Image (cartoon, rainbow, N blue to C red):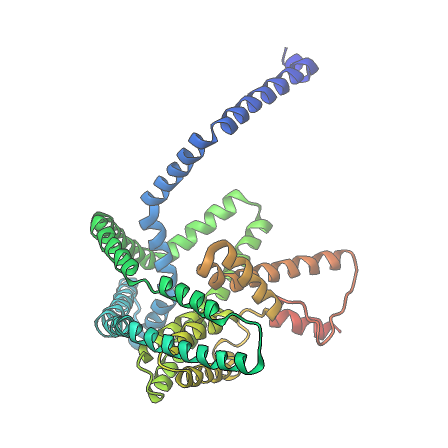
Length: 422
């Protein structure tokens, strides 16, 4: 009887037919009710994410705080040289507390001193905007008169009054301050109505910090548990590969993020000093913009320079030119001297892959995609190159790289080993 059920061809055909019919019915029901099912599925997953968001954010905070905690912990262990486990645990807790004090203290200082200055700059800019636009319209009218004189002198068939009338109309529509007031009122009403959401988010933030605290305190236990899970579900060679790739990816991310943060902080400070020397009225606002956008490779400096020049343009063409020239020189200093000193070859990517990754990441996930694109592509290319090296070695195929064509994404150790073999 067992042999009959196992080998019966008609039974297999019947089971396949039932499976196809069931799948077809499910597909029809889902496709015919996409308007109802898709939002329900999205709301279901959104509800799960909202419930677990403090845990996710707590793990992310712990991951970002871990290098700072390691720095303080190594210093305290070297200073006190504890022998007992309980003292080492105490130093771990003390290191986490120091990290929280440093990070939260920095945020408080920024909110206390930096944010009011930036808001003051923004307020002054909006207060002066009508004056700037009036001066711009006067310049535009003067330009119109000069062009009319030139057209009259050379008898050119151009209807400049209509051209400048159209420009003024579009300018007035763009600078309709009544619309701006309506938008500001709507913004404040939205803030008031979402007070509950802010309170809930604040609670989630506090819980995320608590989870991050305990995660940092027991990070070895989490690492041990993760390795047990990986070796339980995968074969030993596959588990070894997963752990190796995770370790290399972690090192790449940490080097890139810490390096870019230090580099962008220095560039922001230098931008503030330079803009203050140039007597720019919005020095701290523009320096903040330049420093933040500098975190994005390649396109970041350009994205930071554009708003800085446009804002300064309201003060005059010559100040805007000086600001543009200063930011250009600052970017050259960063790209040629400061960046290589701090970052070195942290991700080992060619400009082609960095620019391509930024374009794809920005199109998919916006600014965060542009920021995370480079280290992710670096990790992918390293492992793809490693796999190709293994396949080529198995096939006994040798493709020797030239001096100007080292494989992108290869580590310095791999390149040295290739050169040694040659």
